Length: 306
Image 1: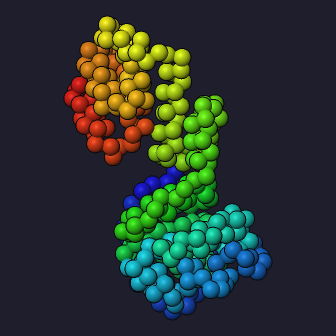
Image 2 (image 1 turned 180 degrees about the vertical axis):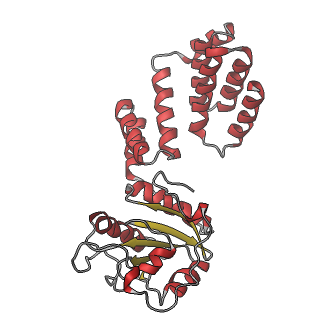
Image 3 (image 1 turned 90 degrees about the horizontal axis):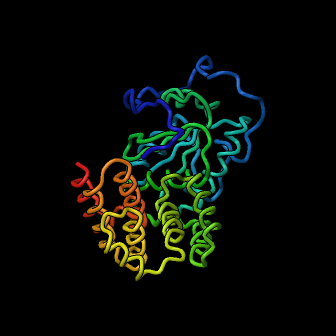
């Protein structure tokens, strides 16, 4: 699990030791002088009535609310402070996702102004900062604000790491992109898939959709029978073989297309070989890495290359 906002954190310096959290923190340990003002609606310390998925944590409760709770459910610890704009803006996003989670994870809010020693133990350098705790141990963290789509993916990874069986979240933007693709509006489909990938570069569904747009563009206007016959008569014609493979994928003959291009990789070199390899990899993304035919073809490709 990873995030582009990941910081140099405890995971490269040793585990967080909370055993020193005993008794009240002296005033001299409080980090800095934050902006003045009372707790905002989304700040740690503000009550969340009737929602067991959100708890406010202090030194007195961190053992039960975070460490012990994480033995049963993943706990996402949010470090924030009222009066800091990024913290105030990001807290409600996490709170909404926690409320929507159906109890699959717990959001533990820590006000760093009120609990400086907890912040010190987690080596919090600024707010907002977010930690994932599973089985009594921190497993990942990031600082700053990330887009909601990216945050949802990160939480999904945390849940999987915690052994929670969860359904993949549905992205309405993906439905719109798929509808555009099915209707033949390739420009709109491409734009929609690229917007999703801008927020979530690892989104497999959007990657597959964008690859399908590419295939649809390449086969536009081609006569399948003629294209396949041309490829049959010119086995080393790179353009003819690539077009034939695209047609085979759209015809449900993906394994045949993979074998065609793996064979072409074996027979080519230099730029031609790299062109074929990249084309084949783009076709793999349509089916996804878990497809047995893709796994087999990847092994064959590796053998052909090396």
